[in-house]
Length: 454
Image (cartoon, rainbow, N blue to C red; front, top):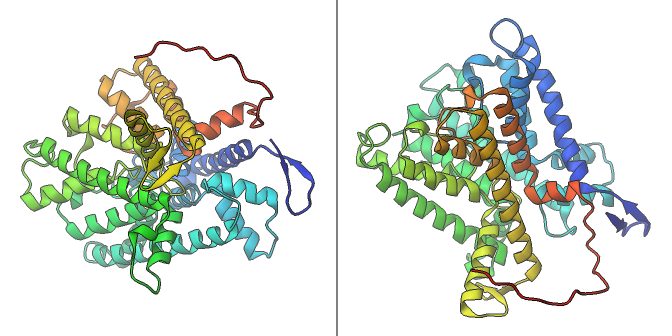
């Protein structure tokens, strides 16, 4: 990729996707080394390279799939290492690097701005440093507030220092949509605790909306009455799709699991509503669960697979194909059915390049999930729905599992590691990094010929 530096007017040759991938691989490798140390485990000896690699990848990719129990296997050193990896993965490597540059007074070059734009998925180069400052301030503020509220809830259940550590760990894990827990059974002990559920879901939703949307929302209400119409098209689409998915997910989960005694069947009606809402929030790449995931009905598992594949929103801590990608695909279909030449949505017109990008993301993502599922179906002896669920959970960086993760074979674990990494980096970024895609227009066009479809 050849780009002109606007500051020096000199050409620079850089492949941002490859550098981003190399950065994440470097962090994962460092995390693997640290988690392989005997000091990282509670028992004697080390964890082993593959298990440490799996855990480090899951943490950096903010997934939450685990092959060893985080609470009982890892020591305080190991848990702190995991927490740092989650924070790096949630914010993005270049965001934290920019923080380091700002602390030492280093000027942010255009090449570094290019990497920041690629890492956080922003549309333009303008205001990137300001956006990074906002991302950092918002992240640490929300995580601190979440930790404080969780501490107030935990302090009556455990000693003070333990409550502080549990509050910090789970606040960061929830906001970064990581799904790691140090309770040992996720949040199954808090199924009917409305306060804990509200804190976790709030952190997950805020982290999954996207930093640009939150900034747009806060800027819209600052000093004046809130107006939805004044928001950007991106923010409108993210909010509408997010609300729609949460409502539909909650209603369907409530209906599907209403009589399932292994999950919600024996709960009071208010607890069923709370659990249903939580279960519609957590597949949006968070990975926590308040009811046993492996005991869910097949139709509920399939619903969660759809929600996990969609995931969170761009410029957020979540994964998946993203809500706006879904919105662009739906806009494309609606425009075709109406016979419109333009892609109109919410009184705005989308660029055809956005539609093409959305189609490419969905197609590549589906291929990745299909390949992962096929390979796991060969290497593992689990049911197909469990294997498909595991693959989508890894790709969407969700972390929910029906319980097969710990029993995966070595090839299966390696496949999930690759799937998690692909999901965190982004399918389109990965494809671009592997090839030499030239964005320049061709000087010729081939003759047109039609084919039959449908």
